[in-house]
Length: 378
Image 1: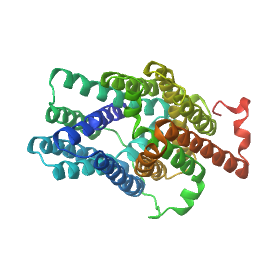
Image 2: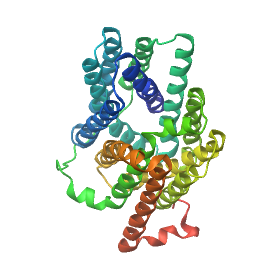
Image 3: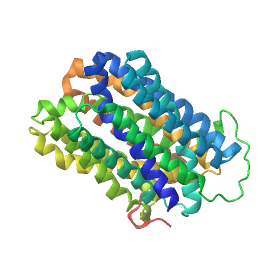
Image 4: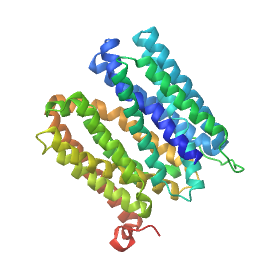
């Protein structure tokens, strides 16, 4: 239960305020849209670095110390973000935003590895709490802003308290005697072993981030108000919470394949809508697609590797890399081809990712896992 609370609270505290970052940058600090995209890429780059190095460190030095350091630094960085809003100054805000990106990448691999060991490999319901925390955080920030207009510093202070609450719980988290593993700084063999999932996730998620960088503008272009944009995002977040909770019953290989195929189908449905109401069923499909892909990928890499924190940390790093590349390509594609042209490119990228994954399964002799009778986890 304590690990569940940490997952829920840390996700709410860290990702709840994400919805107000562009508003602060544009309306209070005068940042251009190009600069906002660059800041988002810098956040992802910082997360990539920490996910990579501290995922490995969790296996080498022990999970408890990495978990506590990551949560504590995340709380400090979030408090500093409140100070940066009060004091003002674009450079200060950006520096702290990058610090949050780094701190938020330190502890997840350690927490995921702990959960895997204590839950017998069942990661679906645990991952669902992360999605639920994201949804609750967004909802709390939205309600806070409804009653206290432009109270951005107070929002960050609220989230600081939430993160430090997760830190206090982590102090009491029971850890069995940990053994140190010898993991190379660049784990070539581990990367090669999990390459089909890492490569597929990188391609699919890059395409997804091409969409997300202009997605609110796309929704507004089909008639959504700012409030409806928030509701549409919430459908995805709470949809993931529901779907991830039931994913443990299926073979992870099947989940990855279904997640990639359904991502392509979901993105394609975005091109067919003519009104913001029509996008809501697509958001439910999106939640199911991502839940299948993420839980399947996470279990795939953790089931096959002793270095579970390193393997999951590399998965997070892969997603962070897509968060750097995707927005840049998405901005260029939206300018050249429009919203729906960008979405079609992302659709084709998900198809390509599925092809790569299926090819790798065929090469490894694991294609049999996709047969209907083997869909349940053995």
